[in-house]
Length: 179
Image (tube, rainbow, N blue to C red):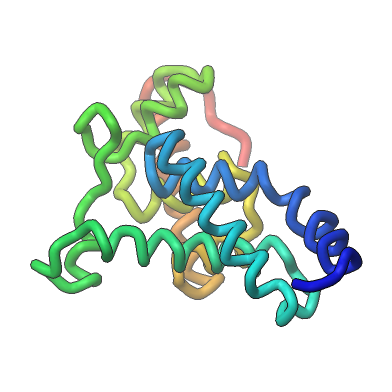
């Protein structure tokens, strides 16, 4: 970018999305330090390519850059022992070494322990959709972009995940949960 107008346009379109970028990065990395690095790398890449950005849907554009940046980071660190599909089927591990820290994060953020237990019972795919849509507030399209799946897949996974959480809560003695 060469001029002050471009810099101002970058600030206006990118800065409002920093909180969402950080929350998604935190979910992807399970580490606040790695999330900060990922967001910083994303912003550098976005700044470099901003002149070619049409200005439509800055959040989706930034989330795509974030996702691709994260994929590149993982590829650099991970030996090429298995293909990407096999690696994506493995459950993510949190900083405590347990499978996927989403439920631990939910408990940390003040959720009831029963909700945390319900989240812990979900598959990684269902936990990811709940985290992105219900906890991080992304739209279905934005979550689909992050997960690299169709919007319909996000919607069906979210429906199934919510149904499983609802069933878990009802079996634990909560009255029927509003739908």
